[in-house]
Image (cartoon, rainbow, N blue to C red; front, side, top):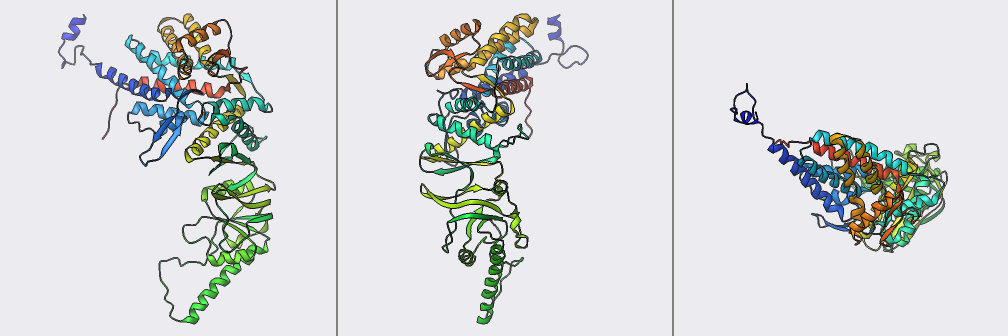
Length: 534
């Protein structure tokens, strides 16, 4: 029968025709290989002993980082399936903020198993459905392993934040940065809406100079600019009344492009006099409300302040901070609990913010302005990050962001889980046992996916310079004996109870890593052709 089917003429539509499946296999293989290559690129940076990557951009900028999302984001990936892995790490960054390398490594391992299953002749749809079942089962297993945590238990929060920081370049400062991240998140947490945490309420200000040790949490506002003292204005104000203004204190311009020719001295004097009166009128209105600190939004149409207006403001003992970025206005008004003022006519005392102290301080080679002791302060906080060079500063900011995200995960889903490869090995063991209960092809697929999850402990051991095969075998053995929380302790180079070593991570990081990775792999599996449209 088979021979007759092949011998049938290819052009005849009535008889069975021969379809070439070679292309579909090639496309699947190409997608699979390219996506796995991307996963292998970040695999070495997994875990506390992982390597860092140095990224050199086209503009000559150099970035040193350990963060999977940052590495993949900066990579020029052209193959469409490989791009999906970049998107995968981005979505993990959005959902959990940490575990961006883990999610890509898991996806790479699952793809490797998919390829061998496809080569065995199993249909992609069957593999895909099994994967879906595996991900649902995995989330159940992880949830069963998790330990509930209370937000009042500050130690547990600090432990999970420091676990996140341990794999970063700035790991030696984790004792300082972890409590700082926890305090920052808890200070912006609204008790009435505990599930809603907006990390935009934690502002990170970077200032070159000093070391990461000098990083501090500021209850108030910090501006990375100096106060304007061109005309000798005040640089320290007690009992400040602060106005955020969005108009300019400078003479008005005409709406159309034109030039005015002044030929007479008296006219020239009159123009200058008018200018002076106009500015003085504005400053009198400002002074009448008792305001003594002005934050002026950057303006593109004309100068926000002129030398003349600065001179008058200095005489009125009003401190001026100019060039406040437009996107910072919302954060500033929320913190100061005041309203932005867009026109001089609307300048009223009830729109002002109040603080105990506004002062300019020298920091490194520059100056900053600090506003502290704000009355009725909004739920925001500022972290002032210091570093000896720009690379360290940027990496400290990224690491701090990951730590903040970890604490946010714990606020959203109050469960902790062991780290150090323990959950992955436990998943692998339980899924392997489950595969024996299933029948047919599904059982075969589930078994290979259970094996794929061992990639995390294997890579952790490999990156730490241990013998991966011996470590993973020992780990399997310990889990089979019922030690659920046994994991790889990379510092001691052996297997210990990871919960006692305080290596913990939020449940959300692990569950979202598994669900997102399986979703991405299923998507890549289902593709059987690439069509380029010119």
